[in-house]
Image (cartoon, helix red, strand yellow):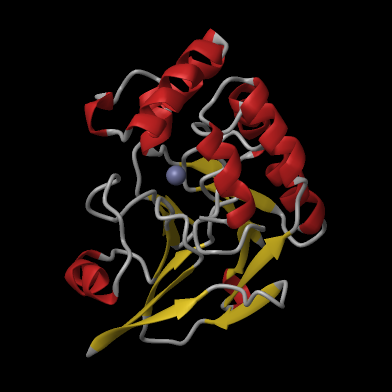
Length: 246
Ligand code: ZN
């Protein structure tokens, strides 16, 4: 079984379509680490596609916000404005789907998917130090997470944690061969709003049988996604940041 791992799509239909075209014939089943909506202009289209195509999913903080499950007071002004726009724009049945999404971690065939950290769905896992504190709580040898929009991950050895990065700017993929006696926390990167300085849509494919994770980047039609954001009246910053990947 080959799993296509998606995270942080954020209502970016163009990026999602590019990922699916780029990943064609590389996977059998689709998983999602949350944040289907927020920031982007196509929350309904993305949510409907997820409802029809994703086998296992956990919710993200922006899904909770759109569904009215999150206090928006701690959101920054741009995130808050986009959450309110998303709530108003979406069809009730898609909002209901977001409201019913479960909190991670979710076990999938010997590994797990989650949004923030294994202990807290809203926590940002960024540094090796963050992971050192989590290592005792990693139930699975392999965990996929999102939330930071940074592609890459962490190898947790018995005596320490080692970070690894995502796909190089001049490449389209990076293979990560999983070692034994090591736990992994792996972020496929964000499909719809990368923040690691690479504007290309990010995703990963995992083959448990061969112990291989491949990280990918796919170019997409950023200009169309930006035009839709501006036309929707969403903050201009949300359009501008897409082409910089920040
Ligand atoms: Zn996100």
